[in-house]
Each structure stands twice: as structure tokens, then as C-alpha cells.
Length: 114
Image 1: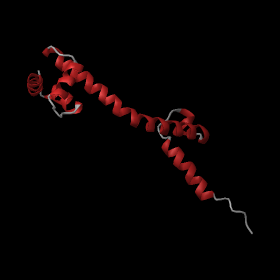
Image 2 (image 1 turned 45 degrees about the vertical axis):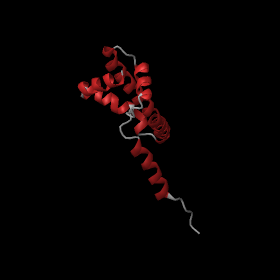
Image 3 (image 1 turned 90 degrees about the vertical axis):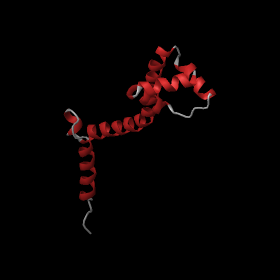
Image 4 (image 1 turned 90 degrees about the horizontal axis):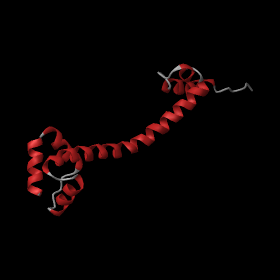
């Protein structure tokens, strides 16, 4: 009985790794072992950073809202507290967008909450 080497499957497996490593510098895009390490690491980073992105955007929204309410004599925390007291259901994403794109509407919200 002839020996089965499974050449097709192993070649496809290697090609898949090298294709994912396309664009990496040096041996990371050409050598299988280093390419595999780099691809595994990049997949870990991308998984981790998909989770981290949510927090990063929240931080950005908070900074934008804080910068927009300062001229009205409020801090971010006081503004959010007033929003919850008045039972205004606008999330930080929308508030930050309003602060950047439509400052007049944002100032109306701030004045209604004050």
C-alpha cells in the first residue's frame, strides 16, 4: 500500500498562513514558522482590540462631551448627573456627535437640563 503524505491539505494549510501574513516585513511574510507566529499574534491582538475599541470610543465621547459642556459652566460628571435626574435618555455617542456637528442643539440640551 502506498504511503499517504497528505500533500494537498498541508500545502493549503501553509498557503493559508502565508496569505494571512502577506504584507508583513522580512521573513514574517516568507518563512512558515515566523509567519505562523506573527499571524497568531496578530489574531490575538485583533480579538483583544475589538473588545478594547468599545472602551476607547466611550473615552472619546466623554472627552468630547466634557469639552462641550465646559463653556456652559458644567463639568462632564455634573452634566451626566443632571441628565439622569431629568430622566433624559440620550446616550454618550449621540451627545458627543451633537456636540461636534450641531453645537446649537447641544447647548439647548444643556440649558434644558440646567
